[in-house]
Length: 297
Ligand SMILES: [Zn+2]
Image (tube, rainbow, N blue to C red; front, side):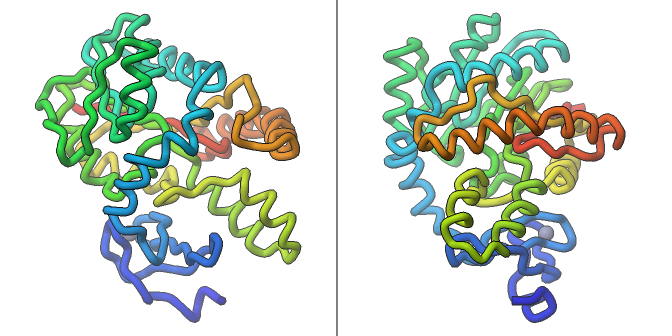
């Protein structure tokens, strides 16, 4: 399918622009990119009921193993070291807190923690393992405090949410003045380029293998999109950077070959990524995940 054949078949779910283009395909699902705001989204969106049901009942069973152990600790400690260089410690809300592992570390570092999590199984693990009581509710059900938090974190969460713009709006209200939002997401720009390359590979076996290294949940949030979105919701001083990869390079749910590919990528990538970021003065982020922080003025 060529781009020129299918312009304007849909409107962008965020900015409602009709200027949308076919970008690539994932298992028969067409993925489109908005030419106005740069949001990359599924042409046939999954219903909110199905999304809620999946994260409530199945996500932890499928991915719970990946959320445990030193693989995540590396990422979480890196996040805390970034945040702690930026301001004083205070009230922290973690959205999509999973099994509470990040909050447990944050608490050890002196933060007053609160967390929201939709999966009751994850909440149970957080209580049993760390003694942390998470709010077992959806973001729509949850009562959002106003002007209360010094920091709101979303670690690998925002691109799983059907309405990331609604969540950021509420996060803005919930933060104190000079409060900080910290978001870690897959690099939508990079994953889209790689998906387009993989899409063009004619060998099915190779295509399937390479696709496993790529990520798309509900959206690809590109640096351009997330910067504009945060500014539109009132945030300022938006900084985007390459997120460090974990030192442990295996996923329990991947087989040996998949983990070997992942390890090779992780070994070869950081030097190129950091050089591109420096040369472009922060405009080019090439790592598989990026982090963004911004301030409520
Ligand atoms: Zn748009």
